[in-house]
Length: 183
Length: 293
Image (cartoon, rainbow over all chains, first blue to last red; front, side, top):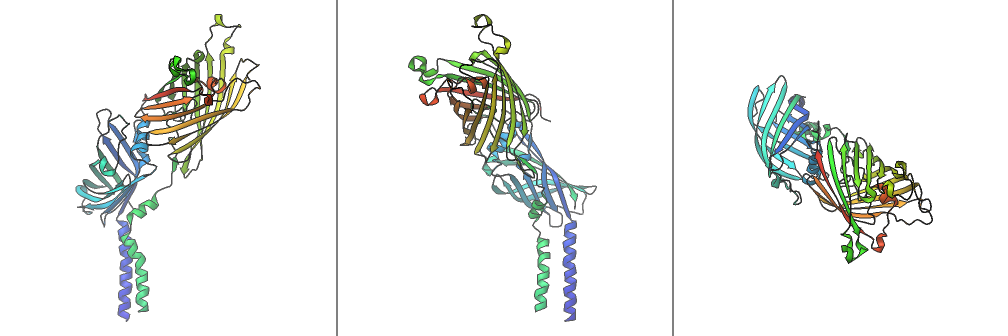
């Protein structure tokens, strides 16, 4: 009976340790950068959003991020208005988010390493599985995650009103750069 | 056995923490920020009058507005289409809240200049402001009639009028926005037998969005101090806003032909419900002349 008790205490301490060690592996940022570029015959459209919040757990390789849609910055105010009001319908879908796994990340390695990120992207109220390439770079205690991929507007139910004469590309290039601090 | 249960109870929170829903953690760490309520109206004009909207810093808006003659002027006048009253105008956003504009209306050959300033911007989140408030002021000069043609020795002062307006609007949701417009119009020289120097008016207006690019608007100005033998009517207007890229088209029906505050607020000659309706449109085109920082 006594030995059983010891095992219990030991596993209890172990559980505690696991909890602490996991949280020590976490990286966060509140100022992650997401930008996109749409190349269209009439007018190229690009925007940056430096207000992306993200957590990356190096021990489980889980990654999540949340993008406040209205924080995308454009060259022209009117573009931002149309982006929010007509395409993204920000009043209905104020946030986009992603939850997934960074496959192939080795937390012991420093320098740039290629990774595969797969998970679920929620955009404009539509959730889809995506699988995109990226890199992770550990330098001076900071972890930088980068990725570049394309998304199709039609996949996320983003339609361009007939009445808008400006041509909008059907595919948008998305660039991600998160500079994490270790928690 | 009892011990075992207690032991499991202890483990549950840790297990939950280990599986840790990162998304929840991220959501909780997000700060509550001020969320500005934007795009209460599509443009700076509701029908004839102003909205609380200001242009963005470095934006230049070209406004071409046009009113035909009265529909009830008959087939001889092609239901008003034979006549046209035009206002050409420009408005520039000095800052996101402060703008200036000028224009010329063919009614009485009037030139007007104005300033608008957004005093308060509707927001929610960490700062809750229920309405947007914009102050508007203009000065206008009617250059018609010519001095030689005037029935009295007309001076520049006689030709001037001024408007002060507080525009108060609330965007209730993406569909409905309402606006209140307490207004004063001062005319330097008037025919005292039928009008006052100062006209006080309360305007109400709104927008109902019917699709992503189309909205219905309406606007009514009720004059609070009308003299006993007032020959004029309160101005009333309805419109359809159609937005296409950098343009906003507003198709309107109104009982006034004037496009400056003096003309449509204090000198509206048409009785809307007697068919004295003018068709017209406002077309605006916005240019970003200075890059945003």
